[in-house]
Length: 187
Image 1 (cartoon, helix red, strand yellow):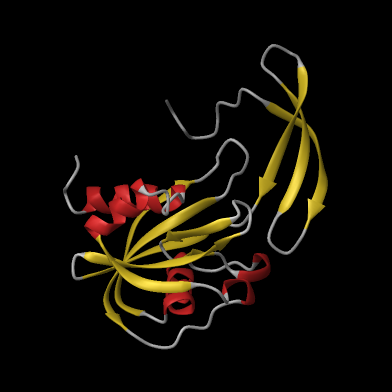
Image 2 (cartoon, rainbow, N blue to C red):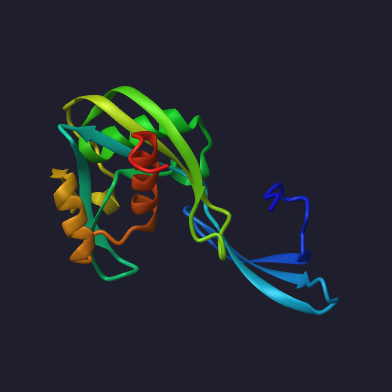
């Protein structure tokens, strides 16, 4: 497995934008398969985001909010992208999202890795950061985040929330696996 992007089995013949707003673009690509057959592929283009694991006292500061696409409230690690497709340094984005959603400032921020989410429909990825030496301050949430709640959750409670279906965010769970590896809890 190379993973370098040089061995393409599907080739794009043409692309058209079906929908666009300030957060995403949906496009439909006409493709050519390796067997010579043509088809279509729908792709959601979204900017990469940063996810922050704010660790303190062997637990985490997490946020809970209503997630419109799934129609319910769930918990996750603070995360987000630059507004309106702006570009910037991932560490800057991580610090911004942490402060915006929780009010916390990280004295130390460590990059744990880069992952993709929904890679069957989108090229979006995310940088995972470990935040420590936390200092409280005011949050400044976006209008869509006005119902957001934030609190400290122990590691034991984290898994209880997963079991209860209150943490379902794949990015949060994938980031937690990077944290466990970083801590030497898994090979």
